Length: 356
Image (cartoon, rainbow, N blue to C red; front, side, top):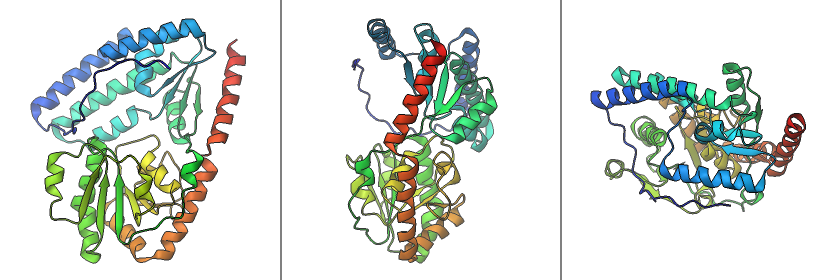
């Protein structure tokens, strides 16, 4: 382990600046970044990242590893090209980055849509070009693996399934509260703020109309001031950052994950299922996990359907119990740590045999 000092940055809520000038600047920046990809520059490293790369090269020269593994698409864009000459290099795409960028572009309007499409175009080219320097790219889901193979058929793509450690799966019997709905996620991230706005504007008013005693609990760091002001007087509790999310998972009646621009494996949904929490999620939130609708998770992609699924769960303890049991069994079967490690080791051995 090599720890490289970095300047600690205070968490700031990411609030979109909706203005013509901001969109124009974003368009010009993305166009410049796209042009830079033709020179082999797929990302711009910060000072601490440059220091990290220097230490990394020293460590590689000293240790001479069998495999160099890069986590996250962004670090693949930063370092895949220079590291590929130092040894057998693979990458792990926790998300196919151009996928949420494309979804954001499709949901944008006006001149902001042009800026979002330029951003998507840059991300797609930069990500694909960086992966071409790797011997293999691992995604966290079969969905993302199929997407990458479709876009770049010549890439060697595998799946490295995420896993949860056994203590999470062995959580003691929960003491569920009545009418408690949980949303967990960093509240400075745009996709989570969009999800919360969807809940507050469109979903929860429908729920409160029929179940006025229901409380929505938001757990996550960085809630912007306007969100705090907005929920005053509503049956909504903002808890901020919490060290132990399991304390909430074992108490909540149900969880919600209405994400519409993300990708990869949505950890908030995976953890909720692992704790046996009955959960209503969007199709996009579930695509990387693959839980079976109506058996292990409930899916909804518009406000009316979301509210109906929530109300159905609030009114049916039997249905919640059935979903809870099936969700835990699903995670135990498909996200087992020992099995994931064994598969990865076997794949590494095959890579070494192929390239030595």
